[in-house]
Length: 260
Length: 260
Image 1: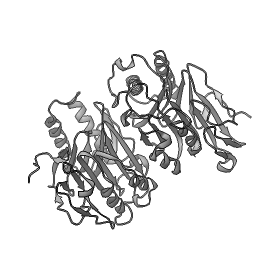
Image 2: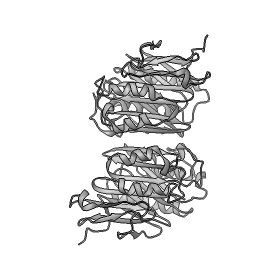
Image 3: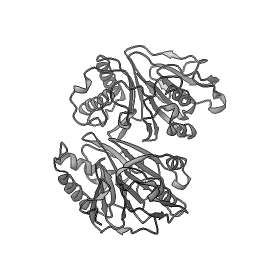
Image 4: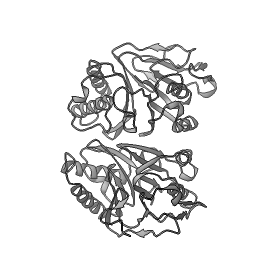
């Protein structure tokens, strides 16, 4: 199995605090030593870093922790290989272009039989069931919508149906983005948290590190973080419902209000 | 205009020597300050680094110079924006998947009217004429060959025809790879060089740095380097013929023999 980390914000935000906790699980506080990767959306562009080395020992991971990349949406994955050998092309997140948008995808779980499903437009470069599932999802979206649907809800509904179908083949914890929204499907484990004013201190579980977000943010910032397991031990993480998809946009879970 | 750097080898090779010369032209010894990018093939996988900042000032470029990535094929680009604003999505090399292979593309030159050409499968994410031309090339390849042609020569011939068509619209100095071969089309400026035993010393033009390849290589290594302008001042760079395509594989220019 693997671990996932996603972030979605209303203002470009630095993910290094969360990332520096997660990456410890890549060989130090966790067994996910078969590579890691991260995709940062910046405008329409998407910058990725991948390494088939354990995150805790990776030079590229050290760089990512030293770079101040501010992003509206981030997808990150640390891998414990169950399907497909350890190599660059099997390292999540995977990316493909559809409608002139860059899509990024990361998955935790196993999917039985998916690699036999027919593909039409997109084909995997590596040998994981995950990348095959991603190609299949994009194929289905492309066949249903040659152009982006006018109502974003139509796209959300389709992504939800596809995720449900994949969930029926095993376990499908997924983070997916088309640069506009972050789609999160939970089969077994995903937790999430929205940080907003009044901001306070957050303390990592996997590393001696605390940050006072009141000093790092402005009062209007809204930032949601999604992870396989909570990354901090003093914040109100919520467990995502099984077999359910949540969609984040502008830092908020759709359907949730800013509230008090 | 921009500058290009490509490498193709018969054994995974570190490009840092050449890269450290080129990147100086990104704002220090040259005017190409509108971003840079590099694609490293490792097996079927392809790792890219992009930055819209000037190469000579980029933190990511410093990282790439500190990483020992060994690769059979590399494509690198430093940008001086002529078409499309300075941002991540307009930064070369561009990548797309076709036949389960990752294709990478970088271009120097201007192409008139290309952005009005119809596209079918692939669409640009950014706004450059270069990315539009890349999408058009892959569209044409995909329409002609739904599966990879059995004879690689058929693919080379088609890529050559497409490059010639694009060259007719302006200037089209291009590096393209499908992970197996490196295609180089010269409209105006490309130089190349093949290093092989007996290896000697090479001295960069843009930076005080020399390397003795006899110490860094084995006698069987064959490495070709392609660049807009020569990167060293004591090696026999050859000027590529205008309006011609060269293809490199296993470190050698196809059609050239190892010779004495």
